Image 1: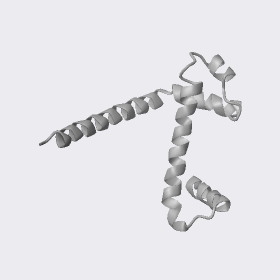
Image 2: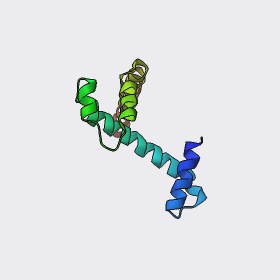
Image 3: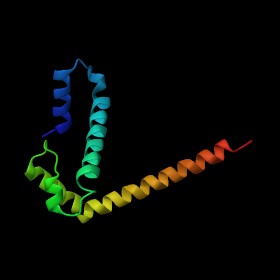
Length: 108
């Protein structure tokens, strides 16, 4: 299944949008999906200590079986490693940008 193509077709059904906007549309959908997942994790996973409470507090728009799979994914060590690597990379990138900005802005 080509998810990007399916999302593009769905978007074209809902809106009048030219073909040249394909890349912009798919990137925008990807970013929105990433924010949504992040919000879900911060709201329904991080604040609670165990599965029972997390399941009791799960959002109503997500089926129980899907949310249970999502909890498994968030607990998975590989996911935690990826998250840690991404966090370290973002900090390095931010640190580099700050250093570069300080060097260029502070010159006389």
